[in-house]
Image (tube, rainbow, N blue to C red; front, side, top):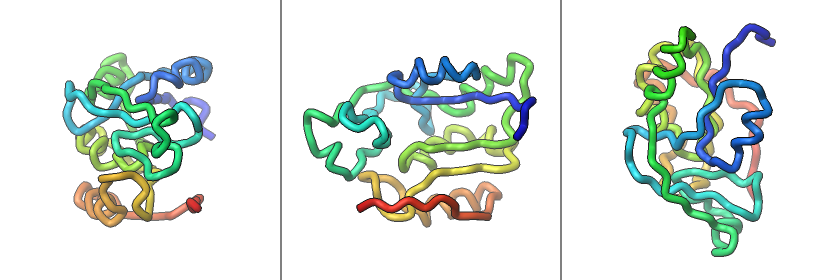
Length: 162
């Protein structure tokens, strides 16, 4: 749709490095959080690659199985920190911010307040019902985004768990 668009892809799980490399886009492997240089537990699974990974443990059978659940200790970075490095390379950033962070939307965006101020649109894949242990509720996310000057304009591609 936008052939001249520049992309910066950020993924926390190093297991996806090769997939990102194949896109040909600029990418960073980084666990995003509100503060940088924090040691944080990152929950992933070795049994179901389609299951989400997050700082908030998923409430699914994949994470109940000790063989499947693979917690890792990762050091955090902020969205603003990474975007600043990207922008200093002569690229302005970011008209669109998209995040699929399994319940950590507020945590990630708190570390990207400068980036949010430049954004015209924010696309978030967010759970409406509790899905990750300890994650903020959907209403908290809507309130946070409203405080930052954004309004909900659409709910799309609803998915339901069993």
